[in-house]
Length: 284
Image (tube, rainbow, N blue to C red; front, top):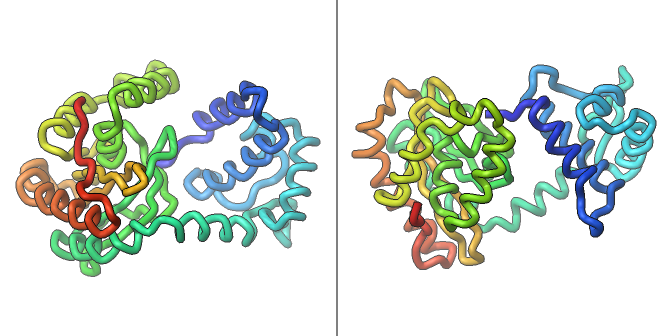
C-alpha cells in the first residue's frame, strides 16, 4: 500500500531538521525533493510537480525549492515539463536504479523460480527488501493466465505491518532490531496503531513456529498472501511472497498448499545465491 504524503512529510522534515552533525542539510533537502517524485505516482495527485507542490510536501521554503530543482535539472535528475511550470524525473535517476538493481544477483536467481510458482498457483509472486518504514518490491512475477492479481510492480512500496512481505521481514530480524523498528512504527502510527498492527502478533508467532507469515486482506481487502524471508550471502534479509485474490487464496489454501512450496522455493533460491539456508524465521 502506498504511503500518504501526510504521513511522509513529517518523517522527511525530521530527517532534514534533526540530522546529526555529520549530515549535509542541502543534500538532505535535495533528496527530499526527489522522494516526492517517488511518491507522486502512487498518490491521488500524480504526475509532474510544481515548485509550490514540492514546497508543501517537503516543508522546504519555495525559494530554496527553486534553487534545488534548478540544480537537479542541471545534474540530469529532473526535467521541466514542456507545457507547464512542472517538473518530473529525468534519466539520471534511472542510472542509479539500474546500478542498484544490477547489484542484486538474487533477482536473476529468483526470477525463474518465482515465475514457476506464479504459474503453478495462478498467482502473483514478489521479492522485496526493507526500506523503513515500508517494503520495496525489487522483482515481480505474475501468472500469464490470471484474470485478477495484485498489481504491484518493481519499485512499489507496501506497509511493513499489514503486508505478508513486511511481517516476514519483522519475523526474520533479531529481537532487538525488531523491537526498535516496532517502537518507531508505533510512534509514527499514533492513534492508528491498533488498526495498523492488527494480526501482527499472530504473524510473528507463525514466523517463529512455521517459518512463514500470512496476510488475509490486511494490506489490501481483496488480496491475501503468504511470505517467507531469506538471507543473502552478504547477510541482507529479503522477503518472498505468493498470493492473489482473497476468494481463491483463503487461509487453509495458503497454509496447506502455497506455504510449503514457497518455503521450498526460498531454499532453492538461497542455495543458488550462495546462502546455505534461507533465514526463514527468528525467535519472535
